[in-house]
Image 1 (cartoon, one colour):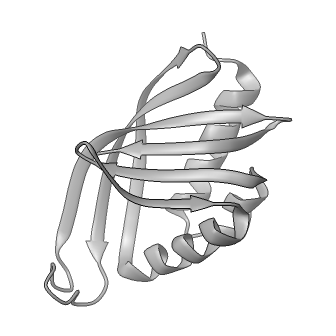
Image 2: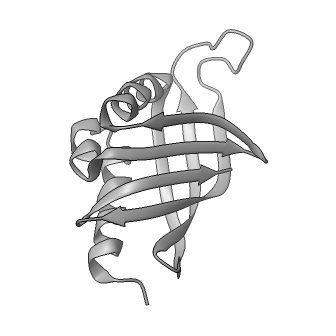
Length: 127
């Protein structure tokens, strides 16, 4: 059973993400938060600290006309919570050498959440 406070933090973070509410996302993380996104076995992006995460979040939000993460399930592994998440997004503008505006991206992956002093201090996405 997932700790209720941790479950609520993850739910709030995903809700803020889905609503493009970056300020609310940042309010839920520690100042020294570590974020990583892995594509396959490769680390594709990483940030250290709230300021770097904010920059990445604002760039990421601008890429999508709409986006939605759906929490499918969660389980604890030691001190972290692993969430299986389904993602659906629509690209806002043509991306050079990438998908065009209106393209739909759908995928499923996991996000590992770590915690410190009642906030999220680590997010490791794998997809």
